[in-house]
Length: 418
Ligand code: B12
Image 1 (tube, rainbow, N blue to C red):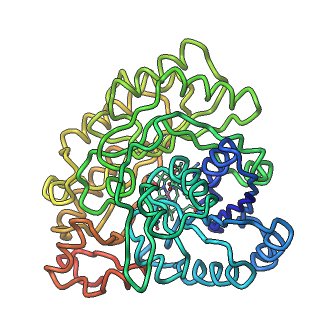
Image 2 (cartoon, rainbow, N blue to C red):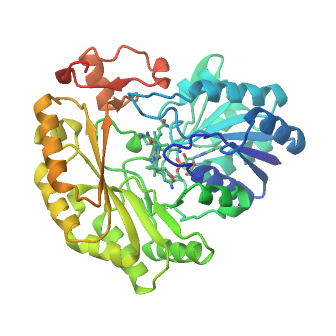
Image 3 (tube, rainbow, N blue to C red):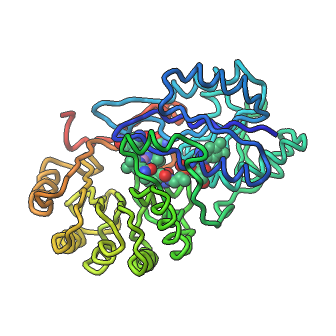
């Protein structure tokens, strides 16, 4: 069976992001015995022509589309990608009758909406490297819709205009740690020359309760931790192959704290030569020991998702930490040489001019001259999150879930429209 996977993301802001999920899914399908090609649209001058060519030459029996961003999450300068995705899917459909399968982080959050707006046949939810080979196998054996829904977990489709989902759903499909052979699937030279970092993941799942976030919906709330020594070995292997700028893309790197520590200690015990980064440190679990271990492991940059320095707003956002935690994190960061990128989120529920001032005062004190602070304004509202319920109750959100494929943002009524 010939399989084509189209990595559809073309956004180069802030940098082009390596299609980690698409490469992983491609590698797992190949391992299961399928002939797989990846068409990465990131640097293609004409996506339509590239799609046409890949379909005509490869004659795939199934086409997977990896969907990363629905939009750029930016309230002030919004760019949506859903219209583009729908026309890409239509273009694929014009050239082939083979089933079209959607996968990616947004697919787990809005499967029905994405299936309806694109006209794709199947949505794969959760860990693609687990679902995709099973799905191909069942379809290869002639499985029709009902059979696919019965036999393959984590699949959704629309039949006779009714949205249907597998009888069995689980986030525990694949527990194996995997780093795909990126060079085999995509043009790594192009990514590296455009300042992309090489992604690696030390866990899946997110148990936190941030009211706006979809991580728990798309990956589940239970941690699936990858063995620290395997993660560290992979960093060393990537680095030895010349891929030295490596980024941990975990939802939160420093939780569980002991897991992050174990990875850092392993890396420090046999240095990799890699320049490591992560943008996702939770301030509740930052201390001097962790930062020291990260420094010794080879981290050259970290990001802290602080969000706000008002206890009231942090509470409302469901962050589970307080301004005291932020102060302790800031002290630890000050005593460590690793540069830090502070992320703040302005406009959450309960935000007022006073709470914004608190956050800015904190940033003025905490952010060293060598560091960077970034302020996001407004929060993208996703269906199924507590923020969506709050926004509806406050009358801020009136869009139907289908309409929420296009971005809607929460901006605290306490800040006016300004
Ligand atoms: C780390 C990260 C970043 C890093 C990336 C660094 C790097 N080197 O890769 C940085 C900070 C650069 C970044 C930037 C942005 N990000 Co970001 N990012 C993430 C994060 C936390 C992890 C992404 C990741 O690599 N996961 C690991 C891989 C393996 O998982 P995956 O891609 O989901 O793939 C799995 C499944 O989805 C599935 N799958 C994937 N493809 C396919 C295909 C098929 C056919 C199948 C069957 C299955 C399948 O199987 C895969 C393996 O299990 C996610 C949150 C999350 N948990 O997804 C947000 C996330 C992807 N980012 C998001 C956004 C919005 C952005 C930005 C637009 C933000 C901004 N305003 O700048 C930019 C866009 C950048 C760009 N050029 O595209 C959103 C996308 C939401 C949406 N769907 O619309 C997410 C989901 C966070 C959120 N808000 O919920 N990001």
